[in-house]
Structures are given as C-alpha cells and as structure tokens.
Image 1 (cartoon, rainbow, N blue to C red):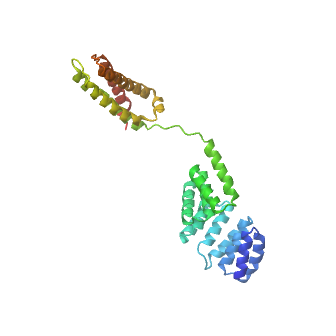
Image 2: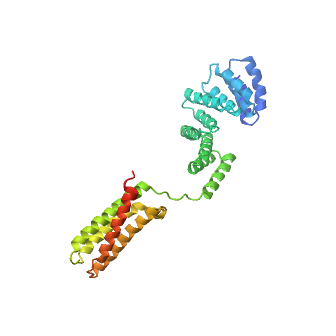
Image 3: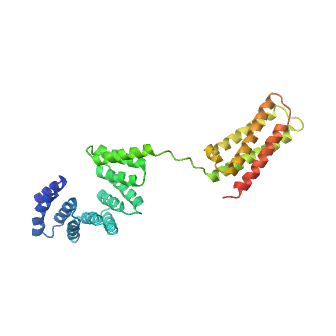
Length: 313
C-alpha cells in the first residue's frame, strides 16, 4: 500500500494524474478507511480539473482518522474551483485551525481568499505568514507575490517573486510575474506630494507669531535710531523663522489654495524685507521704514493665518 501511495504521489507530481487515479481507485476500493489514499485521489482529481470528484474524495477523507488538515485543504481548493468561494474559505480556515503550524494551510487560505472581493488584505496576511513559516518553500513566496500584486504592493511583490525564483530557478510563472511587476513599477509616475494642511497651518501660525512678536520687539529696541547691534537680534529671528519654514515642505503645494498662497506670500515678504533691513543695518543704515513694512506684512499675514487655519483642528 505504501509503495502504491508513493507511486501515485510521484505520478501526480510529474504531471500524470490520470495514471495516479488508475492506481488509487483499486486501493480505496479495497481499503475504504484509508484517509491518505482518499487524499491522494482527491489531489489527482484536482490536477485534472475534476473538482466534483476531488471534493467527494476529500469529504471521504474528512470522516476518517488521518492527517487532520489535509482533507480540509483539498476540499477548499475543490470548492474554490467550483465557484463556491465562501465554503472554500470556511474549509481553508478550518485547515489552518486544525494545524496552525502548517504553511500549506495558509497558502490555500490565501489562494481561496484571492477570489473574494474583500479578501485581499487577509489573503496577503495569510501568504506572508506562510512565507515566514516556510522560508525555503518557493510556493509560499509565489502566493505572497500574487497577493501583493493584487494589492499593488510592488515592492513586496518583487521581493516575493525574486525569493521564489531563487528557491526554484525553473519557476517560469514567477519570472513572468516579476517582469510584470517591474513594468508596472517603471510605468507608475511618482505621485504628487501631499500637503499636511494641519501641519502647514501650525507652522504658519508659529511663523507669524515670530515675525509679529519679533518685529515689534525690534521696533521698540530700534527707537529712535537703530544700531548695527540690532542686526544680531533680527538675524537670530530670521534663523528661527527659517527653521519653522522648513515644516512647510513641499513648497510647491503651498500655492494650491488661494488663501494659503496669499498668507505665505505676505509672511515671505515680511521675512525678506526683514532680511534686507538686517543686512542694511550691518552696513550702517539707520532707517526704520523697512522694519515697519515687514511688521505690517507679518500682521496681515498673521490675521489671515487666524482666519484660515487658526480655528481648524
């Protein structure tokens, strides 16, 4: 019996499932309570695309003493081929429940869930778990690559297919899928940088407070006649503004909204005028008019920050 089962397994693995069935039918007829023989028969029927016969054989194995998870896996694959996807998912989950350390159960669960419109995430998780349980099995990485491909996770898909090919260099399916992933990654244009509006408004609020408060202090300190020493204070103020302004990146997106564009322009004008006045102070300038202009721009910009983003949480 053992020799017949081994021979049947070899025939199925070598692409000769019909010969395996011819060997197994007399065996199950003579030994109807042999669970492994029924499982081998179910696997051979699956390879031939005979899902009904495979399901019948798997059900016979379920009620017998034998490997607890194998009949459930076979039944899940047969049900999936028959289009009974919900029942297939139930059988696959039962296989995992009965033998949680068997990577093959997670592979079948991932394959079955792939047919469900809302099963992509669970299929990916199952395939990932299978690859972790069996890091030397190419099949686990094949299924992981397929699950990642469906989710458009190009990085994971490429890694999975490369791992599968490394484990099985003759795997033509993974090679073809890897080429598909690489084409899609190359064709996918980089997405536009997204603006974090809450972070932008917080940064603008801080920037306006620095320019308004710092500008007011500079006005008071510069009365009635500013000295070059005041340039050190305004220079430090500008440095603080620069640090805060870095939070506004990506800068191109700041002009997507009109109110935001006006606010940024006013605060930028305030900072530029203040910077010019700081340089002029170092060369002996004594006028206060640029500082007043800078401060007024900061006040108006700060008011727009309050109106546009100060009340939004």
